[in-house]
Image (tube, rainbow, N blue to C red; front, side, top):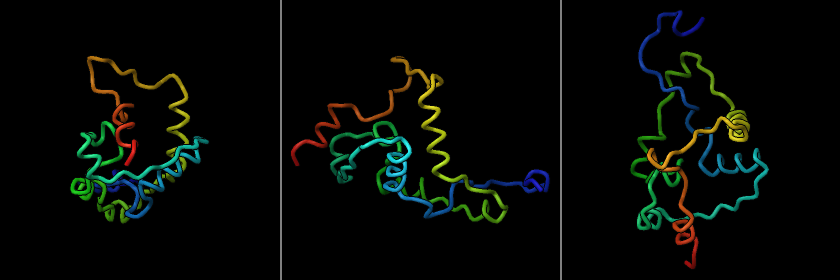
Amino acid sequence: MEVAEAGTGGAVNATGPVGMTTLGGLLDLCREVTGGDAEWVPVPEADLLDAGVEPRTHLPLWLPAELARTAWDVDTTRARALGLPSRPLAQTVADTWAWQQGDRRPVYSPHGLPRPGLPAELEAALLGPR
C-alpha cells in the first residue's frame, strides 16, 4: 500500500540511509560510470575558505564542516520505517550522466545564476605549489 493511500502524513526525509556513501565514494563512482580519469586532490577546508571558494556554487557537493553536519546528516529513519526505497546510487549517477550527454541540459544565462563549478583561475591557485 502506498504511503499516501494509507493516510500517513507528515514530513519524511527520503534520501539514502546514513552511511550509504562518502563524498570520495561518490566521486569514485562518478569517475567509474563516466569512464573518466580525474585525479582527486584533497585540499584542506581552511584553504578553500581562505581562497573564497563558494560552497554549492564552486564545489556543488562541498559544504564547510559546520554546515555539512546539518545538511548531509539527515535522519531517514521514518522513510525506512514507511518502506520507502533508496535508489541505488550507481543507477542515479548513470542516469544523470546519460542526461548530461543529451541536449536537455539547462542553459546558463549571464543574467541569471552563476554557472556552477570552480573557476579555472581559482582551481589553479588552489592546486598550485603548496
